[in-house]
Structure formats: structure tokens, C-alpha cells
Image 1 (tube, rainbow, N blue to C red):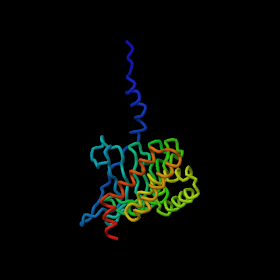
Image 2: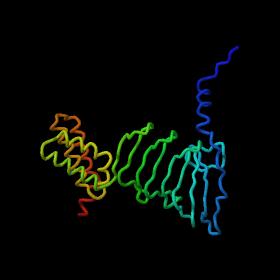
Image 3: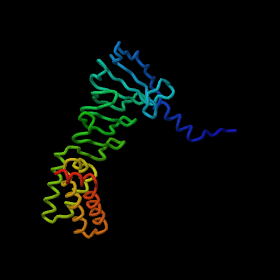
Image 4: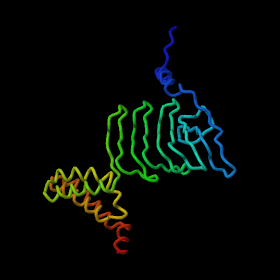
Length: 232
């Protein structure tokens, strides 16, 4: 009788060398000094939930980092169980993890997943996000200067009654950048939402325009914004 192997087992066997073909590096002595500070190179095993583990059967990733007096020195690297790179970047703190400077994340295939810079744990500047085939999927710029520049472009289009062009820019800015204005520049945030509503209205999209007008109303009467008015 000919035995037919289930497809899921066949798939698992095919992927096995990719996932587990690399010999798992041993956790180093991971030395701490008399004060409990990490020193030298550390190798840390990590499970699928991104938690540390000492069980080699549960390892899905592992990190390599060099420490001096408990502070990460140079680049920190994270690898898939296969041995392929998952992350490389700079950290100024390990616990809690605070990234700083350029960082790059990778798919298991080896292609970049995303890359950009952190400023003491906060994404900053231009970030690129890639598809699994290596092509760029989208760009997000976390720079306030970039946001202000795009808003000025949109406002010019708006004042020139080029509502379609203005709408496109505002739609780009709103979900990715405008949130940065909420704390310090509430009026800018409201103005962007309001002009987006007007653009949709002028283009005949009244239902969408109504949603943006509603958003403006809710934000203006929010407790946060109301307190800001009272403090001025």
C-alpha cells in the first residue's frame, strides 16, 4: 500500500532547513560583574513570543550584543533561528530596550522589511517599508519639518481651489504625520482636518466631508483641547 504523506508535513519538511538548519549558537557565559552589570558579548535566546528562553527547542530568534558596564556598545544584532539576520541597529539601553540611530529589519528571506532611524526610542526622519520581494511598499516621514512642508503645499493648492491636489496631500499627511501636532499645535491639526472636509465637500463627496466635520467637532470639544484653551 502506497503511503501518501500529508501536504502540511511535506511543507514542514521543506521549510525545516530554512528554519532550523543553522546550528543554534550557545548562550555565552553572559558575564555580569560584581555590581550585576553586563560585560562583554551576550547571546540571548528568544521564543516566538519575543520572550527570553533557556529551552533550545523553543528558540525562534537569538540576539547578539556587546556590553560595557551594562550599556550596549556598537550594533545589536538579532537573527532568525535559521541564522539569517532579522535586525541590526544601535541601542543605548537594553532593559528597557531603547533604540537610537539607524536600524534595519529583515524578512526571513533576507530582504529588508523596513529601515529608518530612532531618536532615543522615537522613530524619526524617513522610514522605508518593503515588500517581501525587496520592492518599496511605502514611505513614512516622521519629521515635523516634512509634515509642515506637506501641509504648506496642501494649503497652497487649497487656496488656489485645486481641491483634488489638496485632498491627496492631506490624506497622505493625516494618518502618518498630523498626529504629531496634537500635543503642541492643536490649531494646525484642526485646520488640516477642516480643510480636508472642505475639499471633499467641494468635490461633491458630502458623506465623507461630513465625517471630517464631525471629527473636527469632536476634537474641539474634547477635554484635552478645552483645557488647552482655558490655559491660554
